[in-house]
Image (cartoon, rainbow, N blue to C red; front, side, top):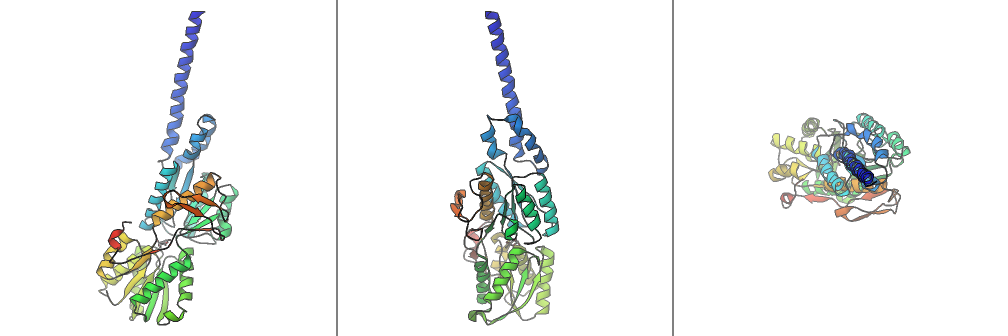
Length: 366
Ligand code: RAM
């Protein structure tokens, strides 16, 4: 009898040890998945039923996989947004996969998004290459219960749940016209060197810039052309050279793109035209420091792209968790950035842009 009990106890202990080992083995791949590339992710779904109740709550956050999709890869602006997104992911204990196409092209982006939807990611955070072309893809995702949050560059409202604006579009346009006005001393020819011709964010800002230029204060400025560098360094550089050749009296190039502004400033510098043609627009301090100091681009503006990525992840996390639906009035906590509310037009506002010049550029590192 005693022998039997002992035997049972030993057997029970052995089973417990095996079970514990099994649990650990089951937990490891899930934890590792957080740092793994996307391909392995589809398998997570099959693991869920095996682990059942005891770990369900722990895994709830750990199992969340959000895709952060920039317009394209290889742009420090988006890399900085991803750094902020990864910081938020670490705080929330979720996985953020940073995936993009090599060019800022809507068709390539749609293909990528379709594959992410097929992999059943839990949420999509997108900087869109085209406001309308991406609507059906966004609708597919939402129909499958995948929240769609755009940030930086929006899909039209019917193709997304929420859009996160880096600042108001009018504010972003106005600060660039104000800078151009200062640099041109109130008078002269200006041109815009943008990203792609379909970029929803740049097109909205350009629309506002054109309106603002009609105001009495800006009658001295003449917008002579708008060209597109496609957020590619070389194309932007060549477009800047083209502007300087076509318009010998050009005073200011406004580039509302971090790729375009750096390429334009380099073109002005290479042509030895510092002081004659001045560059402004939207840039990152690390890419523009040299040109602020050389005088090719004395002032420019931007928000913190890291904060934008961080806020996008917090927003989508609360949607995935069911804390908010993305409806106007919804409030949520965004970690170090504090509380945010979804506005009446279904957008969230990060904050106001910062103007960078020789006095403050060395205070920033992104
Ligand atoms: C480029 C991209 C991005 C834009 C910034 C200002 O990096 O076009 O979408 O927001 O510039």
